[in-house]
Length: 379
Image (tube, rainbow, N blue to C red; front, side, top):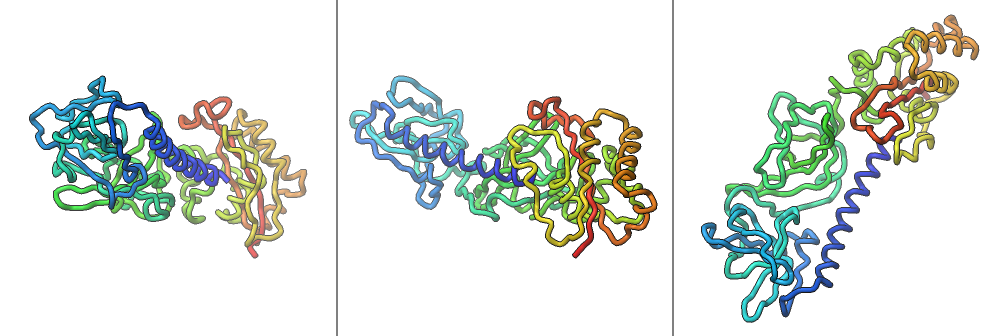
Protein backbone atom coordinates (compact mmCIF):
# COMPACT_ATOMS: atom_id res chain seq x y z
CA UNK A 1 0.00 0.00 0.00
CA UNK A 2 2.51 2.56 1.15
CA UNK A 3 4.91 1.70 -1.64
CA UNK A 4 2.11 1.99 -4.16
CA UNK A 5 1.62 5.54 -2.95
CA UNK A 6 5.32 6.37 -3.16
CA UNK A 7 5.62 4.83 -6.62
CA UNK A 8 2.57 6.75 -7.76
CA UNK A 9 4.18 9.95 -6.54
CA UNK A 10 7.35 9.16 -8.44
CA UNK A 11 5.35 8.47 -11.60
CA UNK A 12 3.36 11.67 -11.11
CA UNK A 13 6.58 13.65 -10.64
CA UNK A 14 8.00 12.19 -13.83
CA UNK A 15 4.79 13.05 -15.67
CA UNK A 16 4.95 16.59 -14.35
CA UNK A 17 8.50 16.82 -15.60
CA UNK A 18 7.46 15.80 -19.10
CA UNK A 19 4.49 18.14 -19.03
CA UNK A 20 6.80 20.92 -17.91
CA UNK A 21 9.00 20.36 -20.96
CA UNK A 22 5.98 20.42 -23.23
CA UNK A 23 4.80 23.64 -21.62
CA UNK A 24 8.17 25.29 -22.21
CA UNK A 25 8.10 24.27 -25.88
CA UNK A 26 4.59 25.63 -26.33
CA UNK A 27 5.57 28.83 -24.54
CA UNK A 28 8.54 29.27 -26.85
CA UNK A 29 6.22 29.12 -29.85
CA UNK A 30 4.08 32.03 -28.59
CA UNK A 31 6.79 34.09 -26.90
CA UNK A 32 7.23 37.63 -28.26
CA UNK A 33 10.69 38.02 -29.73
CA UNK A 34 12.84 40.54 -31.54
CA UNK A 35 14.37 37.79 -33.64
CA UNK A 36 13.14 37.05 -37.15
CA UNK A 37 12.88 33.89 -39.25
CA UNK A 38 12.88 31.79 -36.09
CA UNK A 39 13.20 28.04 -36.59
CA UNK A 40 12.46 26.01 -33.49
CA UNK A 41 14.38 22.87 -32.57
CA UNK A 42 12.53 20.56 -30.16
CA UNK A 43 15.12 17.79 -30.02
CA UNK A 44 16.56 18.86 -26.66
CA UNK A 45 13.14 19.22 -25.01
CA UNK A 46 12.14 15.81 -26.40
CA UNK A 47 15.37 14.14 -25.23
CA UNK A 48 16.31 13.23 -28.81
CA UNK A 49 20.01 13.40 -28.10
CA UNK A 50 21.01 11.71 -31.35
CA UNK A 51 19.56 14.77 -33.11
CA UNK A 52 20.46 17.47 -30.58
CA UNK A 53 22.76 20.28 -31.73
CA UNK A 54 25.25 21.05 -28.93
CA UNK A 55 27.50 24.10 -28.76
CA UNK A 56 30.44 25.38 -26.76
CA UNK A 57 32.22 28.72 -26.65
CA UNK A 58 34.77 29.43 -29.38
CA UNK A 59 36.79 31.51 -26.95
CA UNK A 60 36.69 31.31 -23.18
CA UNK A 61 38.61 34.58 -22.84
CA UNK A 62 36.16 36.91 -24.58
CA UNK A 63 32.79 38.03 -23.28
CA UNK A 64 29.87 36.30 -24.99
CA UNK A 65 26.49 37.52 -23.84
CA UNK A 66 23.19 35.68 -23.72
CA UNK A 67 20.19 37.90 -24.45
CA UNK A 68 16.51 37.77 -23.60
CA UNK A 69 13.85 37.24 -26.28
CA UNK A 70 13.50 40.94 -27.02
CA UNK A 71 17.27 41.45 -27.21
CA UNK A 72 16.83 44.19 -24.62
CA UNK A 73 18.63 42.64 -21.65
CA UNK A 74 21.87 40.74 -21.21
CA UNK A 75 21.12 37.64 -19.13
CA UNK A 76 24.51 35.99 -18.70
CA UNK A 77 28.10 36.27 -19.84
CA UNK A 78 28.89 32.80 -21.13
CA UNK A 79 32.57 33.41 -20.41
CA UNK A 80 31.64 32.70 -16.78
CA UNK A 81 30.31 29.26 -17.78
CA UNK A 82 33.17 28.16 -19.99
CA UNK A 83 32.80 24.47 -19.10
CA UNK A 84 29.14 24.27 -20.17
CA UNK A 85 27.68 22.63 -23.23
CA UNK A 86 24.77 24.63 -24.64
CA UNK A 87 21.87 22.88 -26.36
CA UNK A 88 20.08 24.41 -29.33
CA UNK A 89 16.40 25.35 -28.91
CA UNK A 90 15.95 27.58 -31.97
CA UNK A 91 17.75 29.68 -34.55
CA UNK A 92 16.85 33.17 -35.77
CA UNK A 93 18.19 36.45 -37.06
CA UNK A 94 18.68 39.94 -35.67
CA UNK A 95 19.18 41.97 -38.80
CA UNK A 96 21.73 40.01 -40.82
CA UNK A 97 23.28 38.42 -37.75
CA UNK A 98 22.41 34.82 -36.94
CA UNK A 99 21.54 33.97 -33.34
CA UNK A 100 20.99 30.66 -31.60
CA UNK A 101 18.63 30.16 -28.69
CA UNK A 102 20.36 27.76 -26.31
CA UNK A 103 19.94 26.28 -22.83
CA UNK A 104 22.19 24.60 -20.33
CA UNK A 105 21.26 21.03 -19.38
CA UNK A 106 18.93 21.77 -16.40
CA UNK A 107 17.30 24.66 -18.33
CA UNK A 108 18.19 27.17 -15.63
CA UNK A 109 19.95 29.43 -18.17
CA UNK A 110 18.25 29.99 -21.50
CA UNK A 111 18.51 32.74 -24.09
CA UNK A 112 19.85 33.98 -27.43
CA UNK A 113 23.54 34.04 -28.33
CA UNK A 114 25.22 35.41 -31.44
CA UNK A 115 26.22 32.38 -33.50
CA UNK A 116 29.71 33.78 -33.99
CA UNK A 117 30.48 33.16 -30.32
CA UNK A 118 29.69 29.45 -30.60
CA UNK A 119 31.18 26.31 -32.09
CA UNK A 120 29.16 23.18 -32.70
CA UNK A 121 29.94 20.12 -30.60
CA UNK A 122 30.13 19.15 -26.95
CA UNK A 123 32.48 21.02 -24.66
CA UNK A 124 35.71 19.07 -24.25
CA UNK A 125 36.06 20.29 -20.68
CA UNK A 126 34.72 18.52 -17.64
CA UNK A 127 31.53 16.36 -17.74
CA UNK A 128 28.95 16.81 -20.49
CA UNK A 129 25.50 15.20 -20.78
CA UNK A 130 25.18 13.41 -24.12
CA UNK A 131 21.99 11.41 -23.48
CA UNK A 132 19.00 11.33 -21.13
CA UNK A 133 16.61 8.40 -20.79
CA UNK A 134 13.47 7.46 -18.84
CA UNK A 135 13.02 3.82 -19.94
CA UNK A 136 12.14 1.47 -17.09
CA UNK A 137 13.62 -0.37 -15.31
CA UNK A 138 17.15 0.26 -16.62
CA UNK A 139 17.07 4.05 -16.63
CA UNK A 140 14.16 4.94 -14.34
CA UNK A 141 11.88 3.43 -11.70
CA UNK A 142 12.65 0.21 -9.86
CA UNK A 143 14.48 -0.08 -6.55
CA UNK A 144 18.24 0.15 -6.13
CA UNK A 145 20.71 0.35 -3.28
CA UNK A 146 24.40 1.02 -2.83
CA UNK A 147 26.49 -1.90 -4.07
CA UNK A 148 29.43 -1.54 -1.68
CA UNK A 149 28.91 -0.06 1.78
CA UNK A 150 32.66 0.35 2.26
CA UNK A 151 33.25 2.43 -0.86
CA UNK A 152 32.67 6.14 -1.41
CA UNK A 153 29.59 6.66 -3.57
CA UNK A 154 29.21 10.32 -4.41
CA UNK A 155 25.98 12.06 -5.34
CA UNK A 156 26.80 14.91 -7.74
CA UNK A 157 25.02 17.97 -9.05
CA UNK A 158 24.13 18.01 -12.76
CA UNK A 159 27.47 19.56 -13.76
CA UNK A 160 29.51 17.02 -11.77
CA UNK A 161 31.30 19.85 -9.96
CA UNK A 162 29.74 19.64 -6.50
CA UNK A 163 29.33 16.61 -4.25
CA UNK A 164 25.93 16.75 -2.58
CA UNK A 165 26.19 13.59 -0.48
CA UNK A 166 28.25 10.47 0.01
CA UNK A 167 25.78 7.59 -0.35
CA UNK A 168 28.17 5.48 1.71
CA UNK A 169 26.37 7.16 4.62
CA UNK A 170 22.93 6.15 3.29
CA UNK A 171 23.29 2.42 2.64
CA UNK A 172 20.14 1.93 4.73
CA UNK A 173 18.02 3.52 1.99
CA UNK A 174 16.55 2.17 -1.21
CA UNK A 175 16.46 4.52 -4.18
CA UNK A 176 14.26 4.87 -7.24
CA UNK A 177 15.77 6.33 -10.38
CA UNK A 178 13.89 9.32 -11.76
CA UNK A 179 15.91 9.25 -14.98
CA UNK A 180 19.45 8.56 -16.14
CA UNK A 181 21.99 10.57 -18.13
CA UNK A 182 25.11 9.60 -20.00
CA UNK A 183 28.06 11.87 -19.25
CA UNK A 184 31.14 12.23 -21.40
CA UNK A 185 34.48 12.97 -19.75
CA UNK A 186 37.99 12.54 -21.12
CA UNK A 187 36.63 10.44 -23.97
CA UNK A 188 34.76 8.04 -21.67
CA UNK A 189 30.97 7.70 -21.49
CA UNK A 190 29.44 6.89 -18.08
CA UNK A 191 25.79 6.51 -17.09
CA UNK A 192 24.53 8.36 -14.01
CA UNK A 193 21.18 7.88 -12.27
CA UNK A 194 19.16 10.73 -10.78
CA UNK A 195 17.89 9.73 -7.32
CA UNK A 196 16.35 11.29 -4.22
CA UNK A 197 17.93 10.76 -0.81
CA UNK A 198 16.13 11.35 2.48
CA UNK A 199 18.34 13.24 4.95
CA UNK A 200 17.65 14.82 8.33
CA UNK A 201 17.40 18.19 6.58
CA UNK A 202 15.07 16.97 3.85
CA UNK A 203 15.34 15.39 0.42
CA UNK A 204 18.58 15.84 -1.52
CA UNK A 205 18.62 14.92 -5.21
CA UNK A 206 21.50 14.33 -7.57
CA UNK A 207 23.38 12.04 -9.92
CA UNK A 208 25.24 8.89 -8.91
CA UNK A 209 27.21 6.59 -11.20
CA UNK A 210 24.76 3.83 -12.14
CA UNK A 211 27.45 1.18 -11.78
CA UNK A 212 27.64 1.91 -8.05
CA UNK A 213 24.01 0.86 -7.53
CA UNK A 214 22.55 -2.64 -7.68
CA UNK A 215 18.90 -3.62 -8.24
CA UNK A 216 16.71 -4.42 -5.25
CA UNK A 217 15.86 -2.99 -1.87
CA UNK A 218 18.48 -2.62 0.81
CA UNK A 219 18.65 -5.07 3.70
CA UNK A 220 20.62 -2.64 5.85
CA UNK A 221 18.20 -0.95 8.22
CA UNK A 222 20.74 0.27 10.78
CA UNK A 223 19.97 3.68 12.32
CA UNK A 224 16.60 3.72 10.56
CA UNK A 225 13.68 5.11 12.53
CA UNK A 226 11.10 3.22 10.51
CA UNK A 227 10.88 0.96 7.48
CA UNK A 228 7.68 0.52 5.50
CA UNK A 229 6.34 -3.06 5.40
CA UNK A 230 6.89 -3.41 1.66
CA UNK A 231 10.53 -2.35 1.97
CA UNK A 232 11.68 -5.62 3.52
CA UNK A 233 12.96 -8.35 1.23
CA UNK A 234 12.72 -11.51 3.37
CA UNK A 235 11.48 -12.65 6.77
CA UNK A 236 15.11 -12.83 7.93
CA UNK A 237 15.58 -9.21 6.85
CA UNK A 238 12.47 -8.18 8.80
CA UNK A 239 13.49 -10.09 11.94
CA UNK A 240 16.93 -8.48 11.90
CA UNK A 241 15.26 -5.06 11.87
CA UNK A 242 12.94 -6.01 14.76
CA UNK A 243 15.88 -7.32 16.77
CA UNK A 244 18.15 -4.31 16.26
CA UNK A 245 15.80 -1.31 16.16
CA UNK A 246 15.38 0.72 19.34
CA UNK A 247 11.85 1.53 18.19
CA UNK A 248 10.73 -2.11 18.02
CA UNK A 249 10.58 -2.88 21.75
CA UNK A 250 6.77 -3.08 21.66
CA UNK A 251 6.94 -5.49 18.72
CA UNK A 252 9.40 -7.71 20.57
CA UNK A 253 7.11 -7.73 23.63
CA UNK A 254 4.04 -8.71 21.59
CA UNK A 255 6.05 -11.43 19.83
CA UNK A 256 6.80 -12.88 23.27
CA UNK A 257 3.05 -13.39 23.76
CA UNK A 258 3.18 -15.87 20.85
CA UNK A 259 6.34 -17.80 21.82
CA UNK A 260 5.85 -20.67 19.38
CA UNK A 261 4.40 -18.75 16.43
CA UNK A 262 7.15 -17.68 14.02
CA UNK A 263 7.01 -14.20 12.55
CA UNK A 264 6.46 -14.21 8.79
CA UNK A 265 7.07 -11.23 6.49
CA UNK A 266 4.16 -11.97 4.16
CA UNK A 267 1.77 -12.36 7.07
CA UNK A 268 3.15 -9.17 8.61
CA UNK A 269 2.51 -7.24 5.40
CA UNK A 270 -1.08 -8.53 5.47
CA UNK A 271 -1.42 -7.41 9.10
CA UNK A 272 0.00 -3.97 8.27
CA UNK A 273 -2.26 -3.40 5.30
CA UNK A 274 -5.47 -5.33 6.09
CA UNK A 275 -5.83 -5.31 9.87
CA UNK A 276 -4.08 -2.14 11.01
CA UNK A 277 -4.82 1.26 12.47
CA UNK A 278 -2.54 4.03 11.30
CA UNK A 279 -1.92 7.76 11.51
CA UNK A 280 -3.35 9.35 8.35
CA UNK A 281 -0.72 10.83 6.04
CA UNK A 282 -1.56 13.60 3.58
CA UNK A 283 -2.03 12.11 0.12
CA UNK A 284 -2.02 8.50 1.35
CA UNK A 285 -5.55 7.86 0.19
CA UNK A 286 -5.23 4.18 -0.66
CA UNK A 287 -4.64 2.97 2.91
CA UNK A 288 -7.32 0.50 3.94
CA UNK A 289 -7.77 -1.01 0.48
CA UNK A 290 -5.87 -4.08 1.63
CA UNK A 291 -3.54 -6.45 -0.20
CA UNK A 292 -3.87 -10.00 -1.46
CA UNK A 293 -3.81 -12.80 1.13
CA UNK A 294 -2.81 -15.41 -1.43
CA UNK A 295 -0.56 -18.06 0.10
CA UNK A 296 -2.27 -17.95 3.50
CA UNK A 297 -5.42 -19.44 5.01
CA UNK A 298 -7.39 -19.37 8.28
CA UNK A 299 -6.31 -15.79 8.86
CA UNK A 300 -7.35 -14.16 12.11
CA UNK A 301 -6.92 -10.41 12.24
CA UNK A 302 -6.76 -8.84 15.69
CA UNK A 303 -8.27 -5.53 14.65
CA UNK A 304 -9.41 -4.82 18.21
CA UNK A 305 -5.76 -4.94 19.30
CA UNK A 306 -4.70 -2.59 16.51
CA UNK A 307 -7.47 -0.16 17.40
CA UNK A 308 -6.57 -0.27 21.10
CA UNK A 309 -2.89 0.37 20.44
CA UNK A 310 -3.66 3.28 18.16
CA UNK A 311 -6.15 4.84 20.58
CA UNK A 312 -3.57 4.48 23.36
CA UNK A 313 -0.52 5.36 21.28
CA UNK A 314 0.71 7.84 23.88
CA UNK A 315 0.62 5.26 26.69
CA UNK A 316 3.68 3.41 28.00
CA UNK A 317 4.67 0.05 26.54
CA UNK A 318 3.75 -1.67 29.81
CA UNK A 319 0.23 -0.24 29.62
CA UNK A 320 -0.07 -1.25 25.99
CA UNK A 321 1.06 -4.83 26.61
CA UNK A 322 -1.38 -5.22 29.50
CA UNK A 323 -4.19 -4.04 27.24
CA UNK A 324 -3.13 -6.38 24.42
CA UNK A 325 -3.08 -9.38 26.77
CA UNK A 326 -6.56 -8.55 28.03
CA UNK A 327 -7.99 -8.21 24.53
CA UNK A 328 -6.40 -11.46 23.35
CA UNK A 329 -7.74 -13.31 26.39
CA UNK A 330 -11.23 -11.90 25.80
CA UNK A 331 -11.05 -13.09 22.19
CA UNK A 332 -10.26 -16.62 23.38
CA UNK A 333 -6.54 -16.41 22.69
CA UNK A 334 -5.30 -17.10 26.19
CA UNK A 335 -1.65 -17.78 26.89
CA UNK A 336 -2.35 -21.52 26.75
CA UNK A 337 -4.00 -21.09 23.35
CA UNK A 338 -1.17 -18.91 22.08
CA UNK A 339 1.45 -21.39 23.28
CA UNK A 340 -0.14 -24.06 21.08
CA UNK A 341 -0.11 -22.05 17.83
CA UNK A 342 3.10 -23.45 16.37
CA UNK A 343 1.38 -24.25 13.08
CA UNK A 344 0.47 -20.59 12.52
CA UNK A 345 2.49 -17.65 11.19
CA UNK A 346 2.56 -14.39 13.13
CA UNK A 347 1.92 -11.17 11.28
CA UNK A 348 2.98 -8.11 13.21
CA UNK A 349 3.90 -4.56 12.26
CA UNK A 350 4.29 -1.61 14.61
CA UNK A 351 5.48 1.95 14.31
CA UNK A 352 5.13 3.04 17.89
CA UNK A 353 4.10 6.70 17.66
CA UNK A 354 7.53 8.09 16.82
CA UNK A 355 8.38 11.53 15.46
CA UNK A 356 9.71 11.46 11.92
CA UNK A 357 11.31 14.54 10.30
CA UNK A 358 10.19 13.53 6.81
CA UNK A 359 6.53 13.53 7.95
CA UNK A 360 6.58 17.09 9.25
CA UNK A 361 3.42 18.77 8.00
CA UNK A 362 2.03 15.49 6.62
CA UNK A 363 0.55 14.15 9.87
CA UNK A 364 -1.25 16.09 12.61
CA UNK A 365 1.75 16.02 14.97
CA UNK A 366 4.63 14.90 12.76
CA UNK A 367 4.46 11.44 14.33
CA UNK A 368 3.66 8.03 12.91
CA UNK A 369 1.64 5.39 14.75
CA UNK A 370 0.88 2.19 12.87
CA UNK A 371 -0.22 -1.05 14.52
CA UNK A 372 -1.18 -4.34 12.89
CA UNK A 373 -1.53 -7.89 14.29
CA UNK A 374 -2.78 -11.12 12.69
CA UNK A 375 -2.09 -14.84 12.49
CA UNK A 376 -2.62 -17.30 9.68
CA UNK A 377 -1.46 -20.58 8.23
CA UNK A 378 0.64 -20.97 5.11
CA UNK A 379 -1.19 -22.70 2.26
